[in-house]
Length: 280
Image (tube, rainbow, N blue to C red; front, side):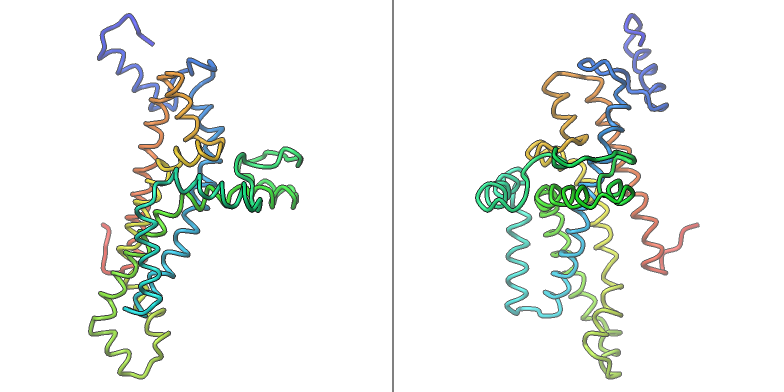
């Protein structure tokens, strides 16, 4: 690693290796950091995707209903909940969900990835997909049950943000002339909202979704720690506690690259939502 060379030379050696996917070896386990990250990455992706799925479905629907029933009980209720959700710390919400649904009601598991009593064959690393491939229904249900609480904790803030942005964007679109024209043609309110208004209101929503997806990866650090989720976020926390500097450096760079890729994909999606945007 060139530890006997000047600092700039050491950095150049590390950068060349990092560009090849080699972040060095972990001080704690002596395993390659890239191997450690990739072995945990499917767990983090599965948690993040499930949390974002819940956030998008609930957030967009809540925003549409609030905008189409402005100043109604629905509007005040959804926006009040959204304000509460935006203000809520992820770790506190996670602990509350664990106490209510895991300890008191005993409806859902509070930690881990899958029940230790269920035999499981790991193929892709994505437990839901692997259980479907192997036809293991018990493993699928157990994985799904273990996903619910951490996904709710992780997805609450994006859900609230998406709901507020969707409402604001929908209200702006509903005041435009072409919506008034569609109503004058005699189209039903449901058709006006869901066919004409929603698509035009999606551009700022897609922006927020893309940004929040990247932020979810960072939020997964707290969520995975609270729920003992075996993902990259928990690996980062353990690396910091053990002063495993190669692991910390590798994870920070890895998350940065993922964030850039997500934003690039978000920009590309704009083309399919708004035909006015042209890419040369």
